[in-house]
Length: 108
Image (tube, rainbow, N blue to C red):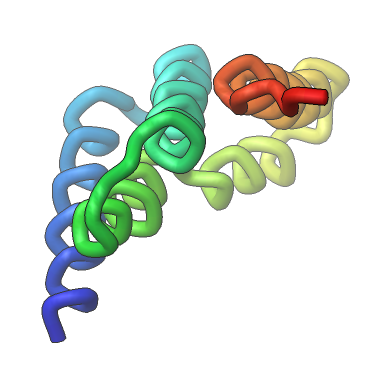
């Protein structure tokens, strides 16, 4: 029950922050919020040593509530222009670049 509560509270906070910071049709804010959420999840996953409840509250809770792949997909389907396609793939590319930058390098 504690795990569900941790995810739920984190998700509620992330969703509220996304709702308050991204207005309808504001693709730049949506992009920045999504990238911030990826960075938060990556930093917690790769750089912090936290309790299980904290990780649950922050990664599948807060970061997942903050980011929204569904909104990016809807933008893409509503407007199948080259710009929306570039936005979609740019979001994925920048997210991956951030995660590679955050992830500790393997020591050989």
